Image 1: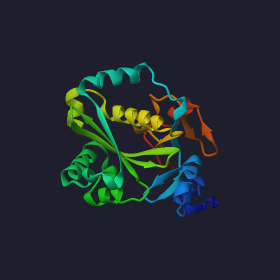
Image 2: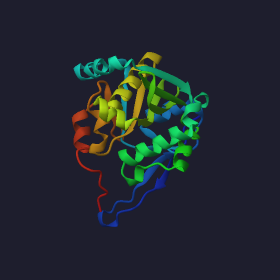
Image 3: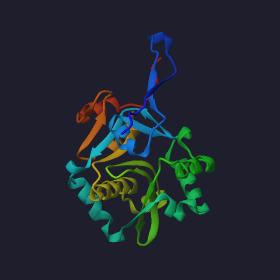
Length: 241
């Protein structure tokens, strides 16, 4: 395998603290290098990778606890079905009504800088790093979709969209349920890891609170010290000046 080329890009300096950061970035890579890049603590952002406080689940050691079992049982009466597709084979993600539902979801779910436009949604579905989709149906109605980067040994749970109104009506923690079903599906596929992105503040607790087999990149290696991770994420993320 060709050696991965890592470059260092300047980030904003904070002169009062004498911080002059350079961010490790991977912009040139082949498809077979992607699992290795994730394993070295990089997270995909747009069409490149940046070293971050990445979070992943070691799937062979993942087991369900009483809370996840309770959630599975709570949703069972809705006859859940899943659909896993290569992105190119899923015409639903190009449907104008679905696109609008994702935009509406982001307006309700995220702060301003996380909100989608039609342009940014199209950038997601045309991003070559996003390879597959995972969709959830309850009582034969589409209730959520996850955009994934899947390469055999690993999967990255990247963007997710789900029916917030249905979630409110049923009170079933739909976002957590979709993530749980994706974890179980990835494990059944034989993946070694499911990556959940980066964790930097209390809004990322949903990635780290409920899953066994969790570990995070501390800048040098993968750590299973989840209490330290929770402590690092306990507040709003701040840029110190």
